[in-house]
Length: 390
Ligand SMILES: [Zn+2]
Image 1 (tube, protein in one colour):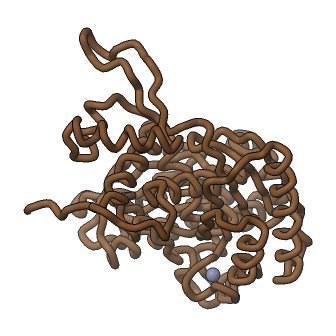
Image 2: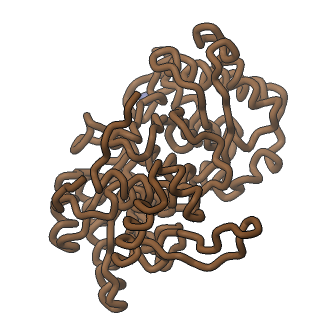
């Protein structure tokens, strides 16, 4: 199949997203990865370097006579991140490679409203504006992560009340001219894992499942595509109308059985205690055989939800991040059994490979920062209004 010609923006986006995901590479493999001749690549790298988006650092050659200049994203580009979670709004400034230079947390009331969330954003924006002004830092991109954000919930968010249109206006007034993108928190976490996890298990199309305060999924596609990241409401698949009440208002959603809150209740600890234990909870909290059995039943349900999703849209890979990743392989098996039990043809026949990646809850605003980096890379580092030239 002949290749579609790419615009200048698309070619630059392919280079920058590759550098973002690889963390840096030599010119020959970069040219190969983005399907350019070394001469064409050299011309584009010259521009990107002049614009301060990339840098080249001398490194020992990987083999005798090999290249010695490692191309990577420029460490001086400043990005801002806002990450909304159940207890707080986090704001930060960081680099394209994920280094945080500034972080602040604004607490949210126990029952947040559109007004109190708006006030928290106003406070965080003021903190950010003062911090960047004092240091004369110009932001290249702002990324905002909001749980439950979807096409139906722009102003009526069922998870955390939040009026995105109003927030967008506030950002426009406080940070005029800085590109800003909002996304669902599952997309931000998926981006974080894909860009920041060394040896992330998938490079092609796959399903990312995030099991945290909520349970959600995202389709991950070629990062240079416009719809590379699509959130899906996998967590609100209803398994029993008589089941526990879910925060979406329905009963018996898979999220109501497998969210962090549901897990805390099952284990008989508070959610705060569970978060405090972090990666250690699976070792720190002894499980009775009754609890372990119930845990496996719930993981099996999570597997059913994932399998059903793959029945609707088949794909070859699933990455699961969140508390199930911390369990022993024997307990995690229940997820795989659930997938097998409902995926048409079973996991083997459908050729689905599965990987558990570590949880990323509690590292806010790292996920929003990774999303901001992704947005800048995907735009090819070109403002939206600039003219397209092939
Ligand atoms: Zn629900």
